[in-house]
Length: 88
Image (cartoon, rainbow, N blue to C red; front, side, top):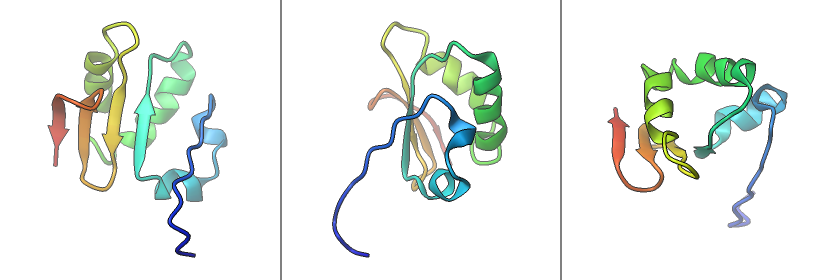
């Protein structure tokens, strides 16, 4: 129960992750997605937590190799690990 481990899970299909995993994940890193359908399913879930999620996703992934960092514990969205885009 308290093994002091940090598992990393990678997926190409957000909705195929068990809801228990999705709701208990502390941090998400999202790069540019090629699938609009997949992006819409992520947006549907994230909009409840981060208003205007898509706006921040587009800003964070504009540059090559850039990504959106979502800190679910603190309610913060960042461009990579630096610039704060949104904070609750």
